[in-house]
Length: 253
Image (cartoon, rainbow, N blue to C red; front, side):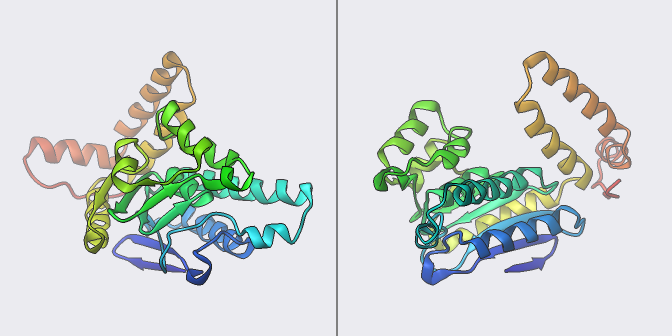
């Protein structure tokens, strides 16, 4: 379910009775929305939210058990992985709005969003280990957010961590009282909306690309990106506005 307002596109997981588990239909719908957003310049920020008591309880285990076939499972996890990578490939920053529980692939979803704001009542777990299924794909995301030993503990114990612990370990950016969650997400989105669209989209692509490079190559890539960014109208406008002590008027070019 998508709602657009003031440059912010909110995607809301809407299977509240099933704790927003990622069924095949949910995965397909989410991929469609992300594909559309990738080409939608009117959306400057994306928020991933959820209805009901939970943010997301991971994959739909009942649906999975109904098809005990390794090829099916491989395809399912590959499709989910493609969605997770689509989040980082979007030109828009993506904010997870987390309430309730985020477990297994739900925890993965939080980790793969660029930013995350959590209610102080939110809880997180990579709980597959408790049912004999190691959270391998969530582990890819979690281990890229949290320090190694803390990620290992999350993945191998299946224990829940609360929102303040998730903040301390780098899984989320901000923790606020539940009644202030929407305001905190809006505040973070507004901070991004105030920036140059060109700088934001350029920066997001560069940020993730350079993480996979060696230091020397990363600096070379960053120099090329920054030089290209300097040639844009927004960079010229932003620097001129700074020197003239006025607010910039972004052109998005």
